[in-house]
Amino acid sequence: MDKFLNKIKFDFDTTQQVLKLVSYIDSFKGKWNIVEKRENIYLKELRKIATIESIGSSTRIEGAQLTNDEIRELLQNMEITKLKTRDQQEVVGYYEVLEIIYESYPDIQITRNYIQQLHQRLLKYSIKDERHRGNYKNLSNKVLANYPDGSQKVIFRTTDPHLVDPEMTDLIDWTNQQLDRQEIHPLILVGLFIYEFLSIHPFQDGNGRLSRLLTNLLLLKMDYQFIQYVSFENLIEQKKATYYEALMDGQKDRYSDTERIHKWMIFFLSAMESLIQRLEQKYDVFKSRGGYLNDRQKLIREFIAQAQPIKLKDLQHYFPEISINTLKKDLQYLKTELFIDSVGKNRGTVYFLKES
Image (cartoon, rainbow, N blue to C red; front, side):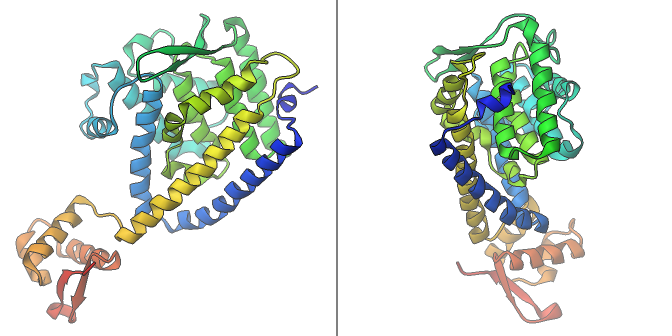
């Protein structure tokens, strides 16, 4: 009997829910991948926002206290030698691994070595974790839920240290075999892999954060590109109680033939559905606002607002450090994104703010 397949032997009602959710997610995936190929400016800004949300939420789930604004400021003025607090060290480690995943996910393989390398990088700046980072645990650990009032609750006990290596090997080998066979839907495989990883809890610390990074990695490798523009971690932070309950429901029967992960799988797929709805709303807001402006473009828009109507030569005089070609491109972008309008042609063109 395949112990992993046994855990996803769902009853009829669960199977119907899974099919409905998978169909919804895959339908959106197809539409979004068309948007992705356009490489428009909205996506860059959405990814920046999602990155900050992901870092903040994933570290706060584990007890960190930094707000998203504090994280944004830290990353903008990052000096590695001045990462004095554990929260700062964890934030920068998470940021670097997330960026590695975004940039290199096609080349990252689901192997023991790669997973341990990601763990090592995740805890790279954490002084207290120097001894065990990148290595499987050698002491028993357990999953604790951290609550805002500072209290903790034991969620479940995890794999004993001497069983971690064989259990992780089985999980990795089985997952890669199933990916090659393409007999099980990839979303089911991702959900199962993350559940198993959390149940094993292979490292002394950082398992929760690494599980969320691996979720992003697996989804990107399976072409769910939209995951980088909306924060899965943020949704888990907001639904932390339900998240833990879903894990606990399967884990209570760990190592028995009755272990099923239907509640976890429905939670995981429903979370994907919620992320899609969030992303659609955010993307629509960006389009209705007329796009994203960088700092230089914001200054140009402010100048036009104060001195309108203006001509190109007015901008040249006011921004002598910016080349005329860059100014022309910025004006065209501001027009395309509906921030400004113009009348006239060539040197006689005048620009002014577009009425909202």
